[in-house]
Length: 256
Length: 278
Image 1 (cartoon, rainbow over the protein chains, first blue to last red):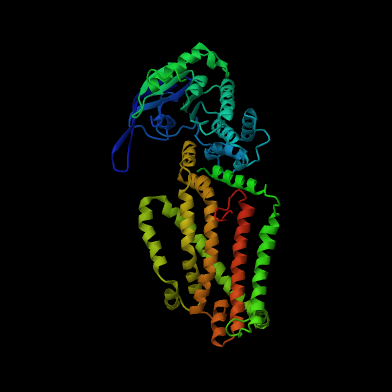
Image 2 (cartoon, each protein chain N blue to C red):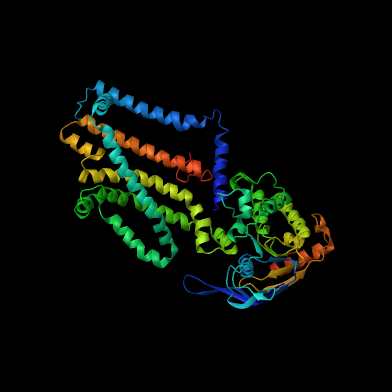
């Protein structure tokens, strides 16, 4: 569904130097596949996500979704950012409806759909609250509902749980897996947590340090539905160990 | 820092202060204490004037100011005249500042061209400009409104502009991901985000508008509190001059509080960025 074809991206820094962020990245992602991007910080994983989202232009190569090259943000793509990025002046319900309003796609049943999504993530009863009245986890849940409200076929997530505490993080990981099972979508998920990537993904794309290149694409054979506790499975350990070795080099997997 | 995060931290401060042993209710802090402090000031003033027998032409006692001011003819008229100039100048600065700030932030090219002109208007001393404006525009109310506007609008433009550009980049990306064009982005994201900044600018502008109106009246007026201060000091009616001064201060406070109230009523989510929290 998503073809990332020999994509390179460089930025021009203030002193006019070219800084390479990504070099010759090719990935082919199937419909409804869950793919995680993992790599050391500064390896360009967020950049790759933005290229797929059409928020940044590629410098070389191309990103093709359903046969069409991505030139600008697609209506059928949902994005979840690192911070919840909610509008402080809008209620939870209005925040979730925001993409529909922006794209002028508000329909009579839009509010119902938003409410259903909020219920799905356990936020029923919070529709009228303002973002500042919510905890970090609840804000992130609202952000996820917002990304799903227009029923996109692609969901891009940029370290969405990075700023949350460990418990909320596990909770939201489970919720995301449940959401994905109930409403399958093609998900591209950026994270710097190796266990998180193995827990979530069908395949983990490991990027090397700057400029980001694909070190390896690691398939995860852990059976679904997944739950915490499966970390002990051989399949989990194999995948996590492989990713760790790719990032840190051999010898570090003992620390685990 | 994200807006939600910064609001969260300020509410966390609220939570700690509410664990104080005896929290005072909001109306005591916001109304009773300020009023009591001002009454206290006037009491000390009155007592000092009487105890040291300060001559009225140096500093008159509040009671003398009161009797002279309320018995002065057409004091209400003067107040209304000044109030009108203040409000017209203030509204002009609000109406002009908003599009000007949008223009300033629209592109670096426009900013580079317009910004020096703005600075130029600020470099001109308004008191010096006022008599020239009277020659240009005639002895009507217009030059007074223009001076008021010139004094008040600059900080307003700056705070609206800084509000428009301080939108977190992720919020702008969100707009772009929702395929917003520049106008929807401005209308749905940048302007609402700038609301606390706009109000901070409006509060500065209303205080400056009072200053501007009085400066303009000093130069050219046949009515108004600034005119009253000038004429009454010329005739050593010091009590009346002080009275006009106090009315001007009250006018400033009332107008300021009206803006605070508008912000609280219509934009309750706005954190009120310029109120220092202790």
